[in-house]
Image 1 (cartoon, rainbow, N blue to C red):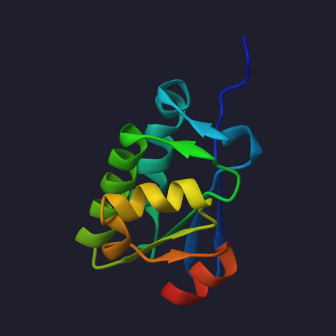
Image 2 (cartoon, rainbow, N blue to C red):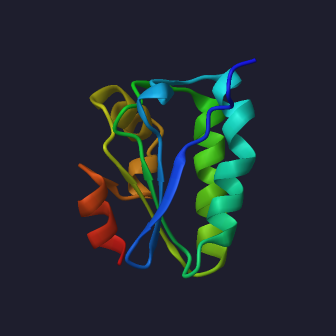
Length: 119
């Protein structure tokens, strides 16, 4: 049995960063089943409630992952926190622009800029 896919979670200053590495090129249902609870727990545990999700290596995600992002944002927002996305490929950025979620969430070029934007 393969090891479960788990995103890297680390602190950068006061910001909790959830990084999806090269093994998360596609965030499909299989990947989401493995990471959903980990990501939501990390968002809930973020203290202070500042979360950046780094998607530098992710080339594809669908509506199910957008739901996870929305749930993370809801948890952070409910705690008067801040949330940003970093490193989106042009396809992933376009998905968020078409759904107008780029108006709700800051989309930054990389982790460093996203952390700086919400620190």
